[in-house]
Length: 351
Image (cartoon, rainbow, N blue to C red; front, side):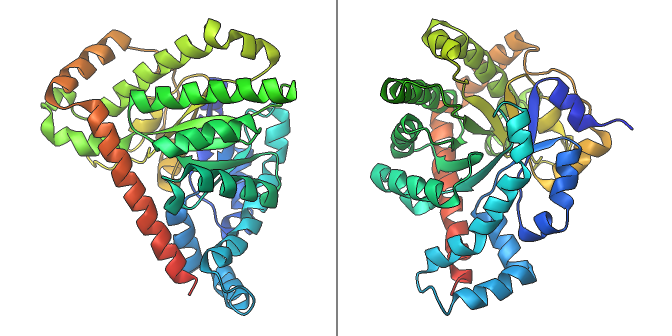
């Protein structure tokens, strides 16, 4: 039987699942996905809200926690951290067999802290120690404060998924912070611990925000074209003198992770944001429906390195219509508001 996920893996890209719940783990479904080529998991407040609101396991456990924990955020963490730990344990063989390149599970710090560097660092360190798994990845938004926190957390050897990236400048700022962070780590510890960081670049939200302003021939292409240009910059940065000495020591580049890859426009292919962004040393985190669609009819081919001149030309045309850097900043703020609203709703469930 053809396995499109393994085909993608063979091209050097990792497919992660953008979902987690107790039922997914205990039912054996997560292990089934691992067996066919899923190599990691990302989570967020929206995902946990859906699980906690609908699964009897969480409802019963929350009832017990209410008698012992008064703080609502602490209730939430105690409710879900065991599942993060169980998921990490399920992926540990993937983590070890991939030389620590895969097998990660992301858990997000509170979005309330997005603009507070020190509190982000404090809480990320606390969660890192409490969850206590080598294949944990702490997820923080790429605000100015978040990028500063990311650099410091990297310098302490903590795996980070820095998220809510929508522009090339935001990506570049994160990659530079990562390089500074691992250099500081090496200066401090004189070891090449396999620190893993990813930069989560959001796709479908970009096209949804901009398509109505564009002529038809440019619609549905902006996010993919930005990914192609980002991938060129990734290779230029991490395979240059700026990183070569760290690479020789044994540190990994900060991989691009493609997020928001479920197609929101029904006129586009339901596997558009997988098929068109496949390249080595990248990750695609995929919601269930999109994953199932790709398993059913997706085709794997190296696509990130194709039509680069056309991608540059199209992005230049789009920039004449709207400033993509400003759009990226606006989308990040919108995304942070959505994260915060989801977290508010999640905390309301804890009452």
